[in-house]
Length: 290
Image (cartoon, rainbow, N blue to C red; front, side):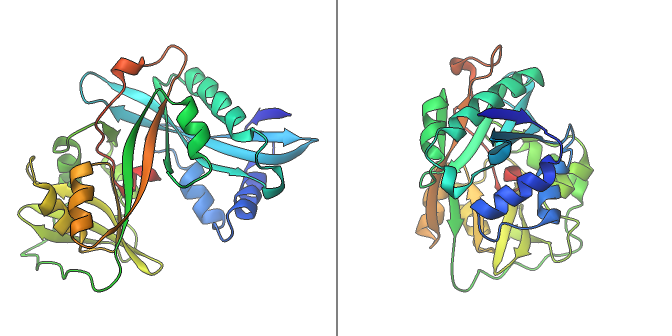
């Protein structure tokens, strides 16, 4: 049983594994979006568990810049796209991949390794045991008629302005997208159908229609200190969103959203952040998960 780093033919084998483990996961465009884009840094590393020269499990480590609550911006690895073939589950493969991910994150100069998972997923157990810290997150969904957007007077803010507000007016640790083009790509601003609408009170909502959902990629505030109820009201212009703010999650629940709980896990990296330096409060949104 071996864990291989970027083995020959990894892309095709990895995609086959994802599609086998998660029915209807997607195709090559989705694979490129998740694992072959360099989000301001470098493309993801693919880790594959090989058994008898056959890939049976895999996970990726993507790379981001992370702004801590206090102190410098650091490099972070992010585990994503973990899969195990159905007939090879419950054999400790994810634990092997977590350990290999910690090692490659250290080799790439990361101060921390992160992972996000819903509480109901099988991956939550191994991640919880490996983490030095975990914080709650929530996926939000809402059926029925969405709240009509407020009319925009004049042109909506430019990507440059949205990126500046996004980085400057948030509370908690979060990912940084220094180039405006990278922020625009992450928030799907350049995709056909994506809208930038007014949430009122200097709040702007980036919404991407995807499938049968209107997915809120980001809520951006012109000024800091927006009330959780105001942010939840802005989210209601869409039908699906993600938040790491417990007050926003509570207000969204009161506004009719269904909450699916999860966690962001902080995994230790050799020579990286100690547990006492790890973020306790996060500012994560949908665009941060890709």
